[in-house]
Image (spheres, rainbow, N blue to C red):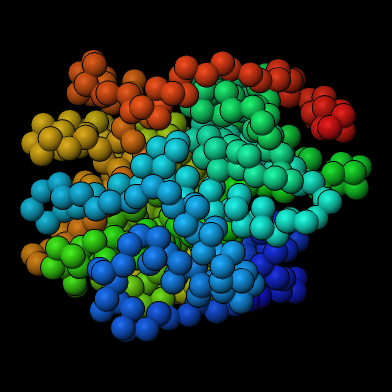
Amino acid sequence: MKYYSTNKSVSEVSLKDAVTKGLADDKGLYMPERIEKLPDSFFENIHKLSFQEISFEVAKKFFGEDVPEADLKEIVYDTLNFDCPVVHVNDNIYSLELFHGPTLAFKDVGGRFMARLLGYFLKGNKEHVNVLVATSGDTGSAVANGFLGVDGIHVYVLYPKGKVSEIQEKQFTTLGQNITAIEIDGTFDDCQKLVKTAFLDKELKSSLTLTSANSINVARFLPQAFYYFNAYARLREKGVTEDIVVSVPSGNFGNLTAGLFAKQMGLPIKRFIAANNENDIVYNYLKTGNYEPRASVATIANAMDVGDPSNFARILDLYEHSHNAIKREMKGFRYSDAEIRDVVKEVYNKYAYLPDPHGATGYKALEEDLLDGEIGVFLETAHPAKFTETVEKIIGEGKVPLPDKLAEFMKGEKLSIPLSKEFDDFKAFLLTK
Ligand SMILES: *Cc1c(COP(=O)(O)O)cnc(C)c1O
């Protein structure tokens, strides 16, 4: 399968190149040249299949030409060593829980898959690849844990000193092995700038193989389609086969776009909801047809604080820039921090289900928008314990038990390398590697 750039001013590349480059040379995002449909028989029997079996069938449609079946199966099965169950919340609303992976957020799926696919492409190579990732908290942990122990790859996680929570920090500073955490005396934007500058630096590029692991990478993005199919299978087990509405708490829109891909592959989803916090760029686009990016504002659903969603380029490309076509597929909702707090509290008190601040936006939009006969599923993108401080301020202290996996991380010893925000320092550091 070839991959083209959404900017369409460079030639198509192989899967291996798309994965190792991340972004195309014309700064566009890579798209697969074809989105293949799965046969009707697959959907009729999907409820008899496990999450891993379903995902393997989906993965073959994307990666089957480029990765031998046995290797692909191993990558998929190894990535998904945890479940993404569908949990009933109230009458016609279900939660698709994507937080049962090692770092308790949906980014584990893409992070683990990308690590294994890149590892496969590098097998037998002398070449050593360095993955640089800037994080404001969650991405760093999913990527670091995904790549932990993968041969031939070293990960450098850059994070802003004093600006990530202790739980987040422990998830990428305690790992050791092929993971190095770098604590930058600056902001998240400084970290991101260091990474971007490194990719442009000729001297670094000639002496090191560098790649990025953010959500623009097709190997992180496409596997997110897997759990939409699983959601359908698990609903079918409960007798639901149609009128399914999926609500996605969105920031960079990688997650929702993967759902749109799933639908194009034949998955019977009636429509999508894009739930935003106060960073409502796509909400406004859906209303007006004008895409007006702006600086992000901080909210309590901070993983959705994005002012220029990178994957929006993929949505435009998928629907040939037709505002009408995009509007037919999805509806936008946006919520203030005060509204998000109310939802967390209400769902917890009324239904004994504790959503995290991101999932809460997805839930609320369903509650407002579902029609009679429709079944709603919201993506629960992270475990509420990842946001203990925020959530306990809403529902009361001591009410969010720390899952074993997080408790394990907390026991580890923080190891990180302090660096200034000056590029020369970072560059000198990388060149000693
Ligand atoms: C990253 C993230 C999101 C946003 O996902 P996108 O694919 O960027 O839209 C939502 N919730 C949580 C918890 C996240 O970590």
